Length: 348
Image (cartoon, rainbow, N blue to C red; front, side):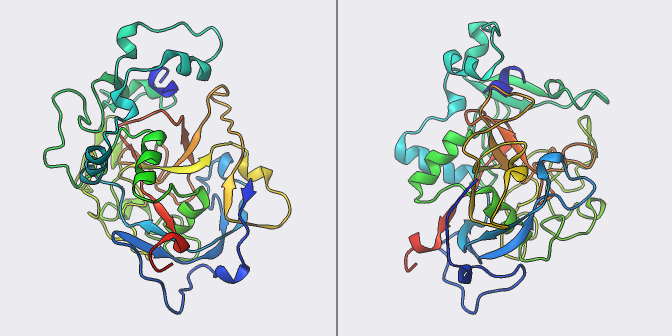
């Protein structure tokens, strides 16, 4: 919610459980309904082009054990089934807890008016023309009454969007859904490995074809952000899940559509912290978070980019791109998908 107002441990698994990138198991286990089997493997994690950010470097060797992953981002219809079964109320549907929020802000930050602490979330609003891309507040509007059922605020609804990814989801909301579904959020390493789809070190989930030739591969911003979206991909905001080709593991929308929550805490220097052994197996991320831009706030990793990403801003559709947010923050472009350990699935 801090953004709303201002705007390595490891698990040991046998090396035999891992495979080289691009290989496939002799016989993959049957995946639970709606999920895909992701074989284990080892890869170089991190930035692989001139667009790589400092927090994507240096590249590091990582091993990941096999797991199952949702083929699509969790949809509005799926999330509704969860809320109807449990009575769960998302963070965006609750008034802002100022006592919790002020711990994420610089000391002495004044309390905003109570009217701004009512339930709401951040909604994208295009600008009238070019703006300073360092100032996110120019296109994110704190909107009272915006939540997963009202993506653009009061007056908007999910009519015609039940098969779109659910948005305005805080990490706490995603975790609650995952527990109810008997799943969990993916680690950052699992997410990046799965996004590669079995390809050899690709820049994007679809391979290395340039973004200028990929409007039919994913839902992202074509045009000049944040004021002109040419919608060559067919959608101004979210798209129905599965609207574009799956990657090599059968996963849809690993690039664009909505950002996806991961399990890991975010540190800008996570990759610099790795020491021996030379390969880390199933990394769980750092014990503490640190974002130099907001040092008081605890942040978690989000991956995959959204319908707002473009070559001029964020390039979140790159498989190695890392972003972050506080766990109680929801946006109109943030959702999630879940994973499950192979041994936890029926027959595993």
